[in-house]
Length: 411
Ligand SMILES: *Cc1c(COP(=O)(O)O)cnc(C)c1O
Image (cartoon, rainbow, N blue to C red; front, top):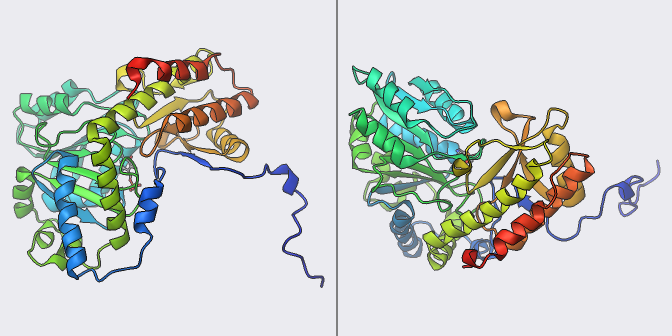
């Protein structure tokens, strides 16, 4: 048997373009992790019950509150967004409770599925996934609930599958107009730090979020912020729980705050992320996301003139600042676009989820992102689409450049 030389290139190596430079990460999560955060995490482990780490985590719990714009309690879990979803439900509800989940897209469907698995009764307000939540339909559904069986309304703020952001304040107003006492829970996993969210001022009882989107961290930390009404509901909730239980996590002993070993390195990274956000300011981060998202929309708008592509979000004002979902014509499969962009242009874009599977692709533009990154992504995707023969309207990139060159957009 002949020994193969590890350094001899495979016969087909020439067919794969050399991989030089960065691969652009334009999937809508996980997002780019800034060097500052990576560096902050590059350190030895510490005693998580020692004074240094206790002081750091106290600071973190405090400094997260302004990010949610709440005076409530913030809980931190070694989990992804799905963990935050479960924590929100398990802490406030009891088996057999009904909840109302206005459909926004794949993420509202998945949260509702989880609720169903936990023994909750799910009432939905259906949607075609191309529009934001209709507050009137939610108000009607709540008015019909005359015996007040519905204990919570679950809203996905930015549905990352559809690229649509719904309006928290109009939904709060709809709940109030129906005079309904249900808790109001918001999935802000893709919206935290990308678009304004004022938990207390807007009457949100529970907000869930995760580390790997607008917060620029690796996946692995989930956040749940709870206001007074949610904490009162916790006291009455009979859903079985231990790891998620807010009761334990509000205990005085520090080690109970994490229900075991703290995800130290993610906390080191989180400290850096909070510092970066406070340097930029939250409002600065929202403005940057809006500016870059608009550049994407200007470009995609031109592409759509070719007649093959469409924005999934029908109403321009509902298009998210975190991600843009683009519908493909039936003859072009999502995976073909993703593979072309990835293998030939070194940019990773997202696929379609749920009923958009195979029919859409998504450009993520949240987190640690700037103008050249967005222009590079758009240029590469345009080249990929052209190479696939997708008819595109002309002038996409220059529309994005013109938008960014507008001095009124300058920061
Ligand atoms: C990413 C995302 C989730 C799921 O988060 P995981 O960390 O993958 O569990 C849920 N909701 C929204 C809106 C998201 O963007």
